[in-house]
Image 1 (cartoon, rainbow, N blue to C red):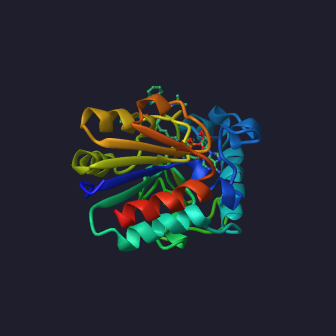
Image 2: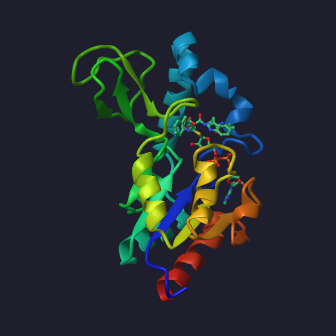
Length: 233
Ligand code: BV8
């Protein structure tokens, strides 16, 4: 593995599961409690903004009570000590990667901890609720929405992500089911680019067959040994 210089890591809900944040598709997951089309699409927000804002207020509150786990901490160590290129692309809208100390993080689906004003397009740091339709700190309009990418909306920073994939020597996917695109397609983009691919997941994902190697187990048990290995190589 000595020829590895640039790494792209993709993370999903599974990396935050052991911090007590619900995943989406697992038993008791978010999509069992709510229909995607009722809470995570622009049409849903149009149709019933209160239902959508309450859903994100609940999750925004919840993540602030949670803490990074050993998988987040191991990836933060990799970020500190890896001299080569590294991009941690997360589908997660929590801030546990950053709270563990990681810096080279890209939130392709947004973050709970911003509010986005659809009147002036400004994104403001936000830890409170939006259900009471508060005024935008910048323009004063009551047009704030969660700064998350809903289904049917374009994910953030796709050009940077594809540029990093083109430069990568290794693509590692951690804690994701491979059910949601374009993230679920990155492993095939990596294959097409001749990039080595590794999956670290509790169980085989929908895209497992596309990976050169898969290691299965809880993130807190499979990520730290992998980080030790790559830093020792
Ligand atoms: C778009 C933010 C146009 C909001 C999210 C191609 C084919 C088919 C469909 C499409 C396609 N292209 C686009 C689509 C439509 C759609 C899509 O993919 N639909 C699916 C359902 C079929 N995609 C979109 O709409 C995307 N936008 O395509 O725009 C476009 C695109 C490119 C260029 C131009 C235009 C936007 C999708 C983003 C939606 N927003 N989140 C919010 O959080 O509320 S998606 C959300 O769900 C997450 O961010 C994440 O992406 C996804 C959930 O997946 P995971 O994170 O993987 O979580 P999941 O629960 O599914 O799995 C957990 C995994 O962890 C499991 O494998 C489990 O085994 C494992 N695990 C559990 N515990 C542990 C563990 N692993 C390790 N340790 C543990 N302890």
